[in-house]
Image (cartoon, rainbow, N blue to C red; front, side):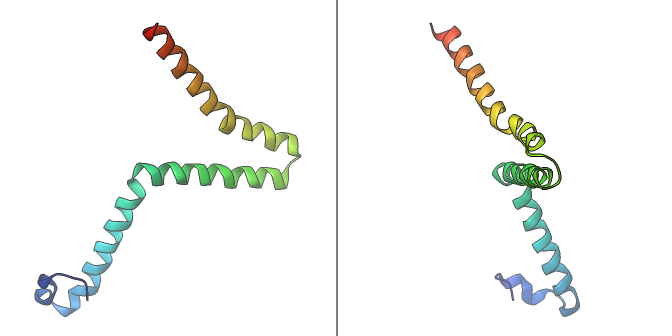
Length: 88
């Protein structure tokens, strides 16, 4: 039985439904957190990349990997150039 004294007042036939609803809400909140969303996006992209590498020639897989590698570098370069422009 979950914590909290109010559970003893919930009718027995409703407890299972309410527990499931609470579990579903907790899972939804976890999935909506930013780090989890970013991790899921990377995992999805990585699975797609692995599928491409297994189905197509490696050159196509490397082309699919390029945005994942180059985009953070381009973002850092942009940040550095803007910082340098406004602070010097």
